Length: 346
Ligand code: AN7
Image (cartoon, rainbow, N blue to C red):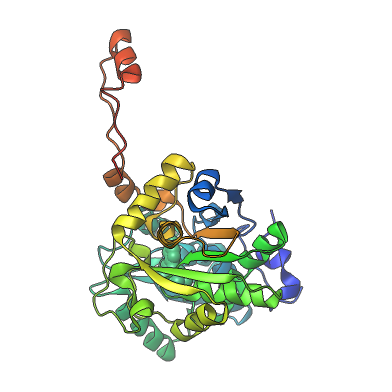
């Protein structure tokens, strides 16, 4: 299976002789969401970025950032991360035979992401501080050492991530609006770049978690909080570019509460059959809260897989039904509405 550099090479800064580090990323499913479409009164598609090799959209940018690092002769890569960038960087570093280091906020990254970064053999540094502090520190560190920085301040990350916009246009022809969760604001910047390069201009609706919404408030957040740890970011690196995208596309950046995020998270899993991580559900939470406006076709980007964060899922889901190994007991456990685990209201 070929990756996105091969698929979109004409629109990416890679020549045919350049080294390519790929895990077959991109070409993710764009599935219709009938129940959601009915609820909001527009045709809604879900872009399942959790179907990428490491389970998040970060692989799109990472294939480009790591391929470019290899082309430049780098021996090591580094990133600050709320989790997904770390998992992706670790995987692509392993694939390329580079050393990888990732700096994550201690105790604030989902279990699956931590397991990935460790399994891929990256040096995982748990910072007693926030993501924003981690990013500021790695930016200083790479001034002192020949290590390639693969956060979305790296232009190759955006080049790779813009291909998701190409895929949507290749499949649908056109689109009225895109809903996307916003943390460091690299992804919304990349989508807008991709749409513009194809002469398209859907409205860009970005959603931040209410406790981590610097773009909405127009001011940095010193102590960001949200259940959606992936977007627990108080000082987005791509601030100006993202605000430019919202304005130029006549879109908006808005906040959604943790409760709205978790409602959308359960709704997607239980009604659409799509399990994404909490941060990803912010896109759908925003669409449900604010409606599609005048858009008739909407794509919601589900940035990461639900399996990334099993603990939040178990906290939100119904309980299992204990049962003795006897037919009558099994019958009762399976059939009896009264003993069935009720999905939590909401
Ligand atoms: C699932 O991994 O910033 O607005 O360090 O993991 O481009 O930052 C993750 C971000 C949305 C926000 N959804 O994207 C990191 C990191 C998921 C994410 C975002 C992230 P950006």
